[in-house]
Image (tube, rainbow, N blue to C red; front, side, top):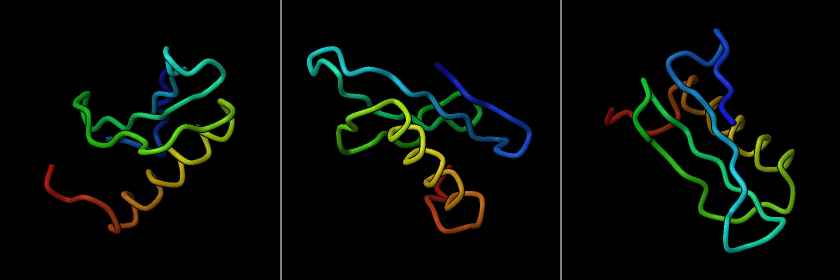
Length: 69
């Protein structure tokens, strides 16, 4: 499930269930389609995973994230 709105360009957020952990979710941030970051923890709900991923995208957009890419 990917979210990519104009206000997060060039980043997109994917929230996915974790196959081996029923009821747990993770987020993946992509930049121009290439994976940039993945959550390092399991989130108990899709909403919490989405919130954590969007928080990280906000940091990236403000210049406080990984600038290697």
